Length: 349
Ligand SMILES: *Cc1c(COP(=O)(O)O)cnc(C)c1O
Image (cartoon, rainbow, N blue to C red; front, side):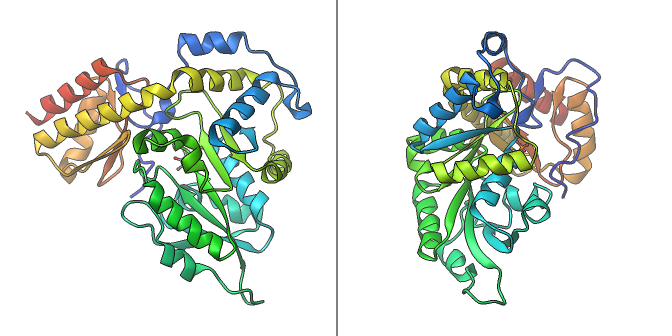
C-alpha cells in the first residue's frame, strides 16, 4: 500500500468543505497572518531574528531543554538531529514503521552516511526494550557502530504511553545510545497522554516537532535538545541548505500557534472520535481511531466510488488502500465534521 496514494494532483471540482487528507493542509487564519505581518525580523543566520530566537527559547523552555533550532521541515529537523548524534558509519536503531525509516527518502544514508537498523514496531507504536537491547551491536570492526535510538510519538496517530517511552529509552541508554524523538505530532501526544511536555521530552536527548501540522503554521519545525546537540545541528542545517534569513515571519506564526492553537488539539481528537463512531455505525468496514486520526477500510469495490462521490461534494480523503487515513485538524470545525458524516451516510444509504 502506498500511504501517500491519491493525496496530490486532484483539484476538487467543487469548493472544499472538509479536507481530511492530512493535518498538513491547514492554512494560516487571519489572526496568524496578522501576527506574521507585524513580526519583528532580522538575519537568522547571524542569530539576529528576534522572532526566531523567541520561538526557539519558548519551545526549549516548554520542553525543559537547553536549546532549540527552527527548521524548514520535519524531515530536515530529523536529519540534522541524526547527523548531530551520529558520524559516518554509525547506525541508528529505529522502528520499521517509523517516518525517519520509511518516509524520509533514506536521507540518513544518502546525506548522513548513517545506516538504519530497523526493528519491529509494537502494536501500540512503541519499541520493546528487549528488541532494542538485542539490536545494539557489539563494538567490533565488522559492525556499524550503534549510536542512536530513534523513537516516534505519536505513531500512526497513537499516543504511546510515557511508561513505554521511558522503558525504550532506558534500554537504549543502558547500551550507550543517545535518544532522538521524532515528535512531529508531539503536542497531539502530550494532549492525549495528559502529561507535561517536559515529561515526554525528558526521555530523549533531542525532539523534533512539526509546527506545520495540527498547529497550523505554513511551514516549519523545531529541533529541541541540549546545547551541544543543537550547536552541531546548526552546522548540519547549514550543510543541508536549511539556514534561512528573515524566517521570523514564519516563527511569528509558530509563536502565535503556541499561544492560540495548542488548546484546539483536544477538539481535533474529539471530532476524530465522533467521526469514527459515526463511521462504525454505518457498518461498512473496520474503523480505528487514535488521537486526530481515523482509519477506515471500506470494501475494495467502494474505494474509488466513495472517494469520487465525496470529492464531488467537497469532502476530500486520500486514496490509500486498503486502509484510508483521515486526519482531523484546525481547519475542520464541527460543521465540516457534520458535513463529512452526512456525505458518508448518504453514500452508504
Ligand atoms: C510529517 C512527519 C515528519 C516530517 O515531515 P515534513 O513533511 O518533512 O515536515 C516526520 N515524522 C513524522 C512522524 C511525521 O508525521
